[in-house]
Amino acid sequence: MTAPRALRVPGTRRPGRLLAEAAALLTAAVVAFPLYWMVLSAFKPAGEIQSTEARPWTLSPSLDSFRRVFEQQDFGRYFLNSLLVATAVVLASAVVAFLAATAVTRFRFRFRTTILVMFLVAQMVPVEALTIPLFFLMRDAGLLNTLGSLVLPHLAFSLPFAIWMLRGFVRAVPEALEEQARIDGASHARFLWTILFPLVLPGLVATSVFSFISTWNDFLFAKSFLISDTSQSTLPMALLVFFKPDENDWGGIMAGSTVMTVPVLVFFVLVQRRLVSGLGGAVKD
Image 1 (tube, rainbow, N blue to C red):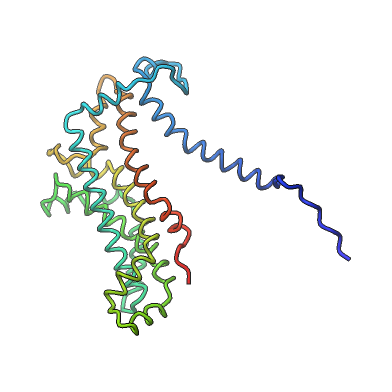
Image 2: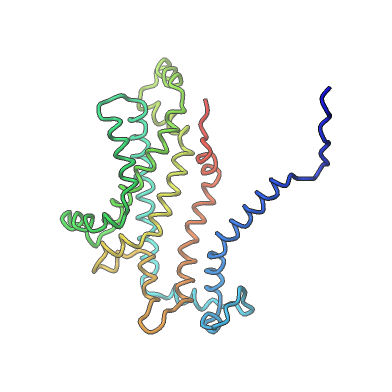
């Protein structure tokens, strides 16, 4: 006879689980603290921001920093430019990545493996190393000082990751499902957009989140490719107004950064359900 297992008291937790939960809470606090400090500094009056005694609270919140941000000339245009660029990159990368992932997964052709390896190599190259070649490329194409000079590079950098991630979703869809659709009279295009596309939609949402965040927060390409036409500037470029030679306006910088964060949070909240299922694998046989 085997010895009876020790009875577990309801409501108690194992020490290992408690340790894991404590570590998760600590990690979340460390990650969230810079965001908390940014929002706090945005609401602090100028005197508290310039004070040598940094306090993690304020008893007299103020909207002066936000007022300076929204009173900045052409702030609405900068916001619209960022929104246009991010939306264009998200939509274009989703469509192209979906078609490319379907092609490299469902079809057999020469150099297929080579193309997949090139996607990995493209992910390994630092963005900073390609900025100067991209500058000359945009200059020769006549795209400098246009929003197109921001859309194309971000599209190129977001596609390898999106294609690699979507390959798993396309592969997870049974080929028998496509065969059944053809037997029922569905064309390849109809199967692609009415059956396959909804099944891999969680993966598309997950890749779209990364594309949106990287494009929305871009400063390097905007600083390099938008040289003279300030009307084409984006929100990260607008923050340069608050960096002054004598003294930086930290309240305006933090308020502007907070305003930039809001669209990312809204986008994340709208797609969070699809994002969770997309990161988890979503499609099952």
